[in-house]
Length: 167
Image 1 (tube, rainbow, N blue to C red):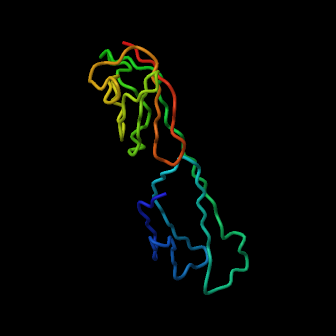
Image 2: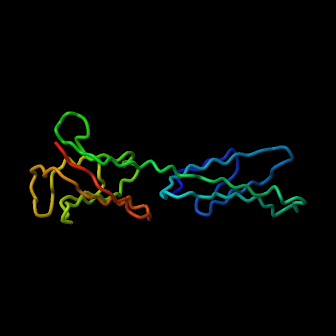
Image 3: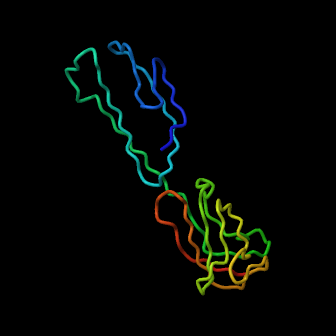
């Protein structure tokens, strides 16, 4: 998680320690802390807030903690078909919300296991042409099944699967 910004209704928030200092909070008075963060994990996160006082003993500390769980929706959906015939449908290998993972790496292999394509920061632009391997040309590849490894660079296992290339 990377903190983007933090704002408070009053008092001081330390961006390095994530400690919010309030000098005085009277009975029935409230203050607001808003934190904006960028989540770089695809798993759920648990945020915990704890209230403590240095100047006055708290007779009831059962209400001093609060948890908020952040669940990351897995938006990645990868199509299994590609037909780069310029009809506007499936002309490129498409992965929903790939833009959310700018450090991604895509590798595509032919049925013999030869890597024929690679892209860092893949942008849904593979049109069935090789940029490496035995057929290192810009010519279209033959109709058939190809295999991919899509590493989102989140620390999770890369996505793997197959796609069918047809014209």
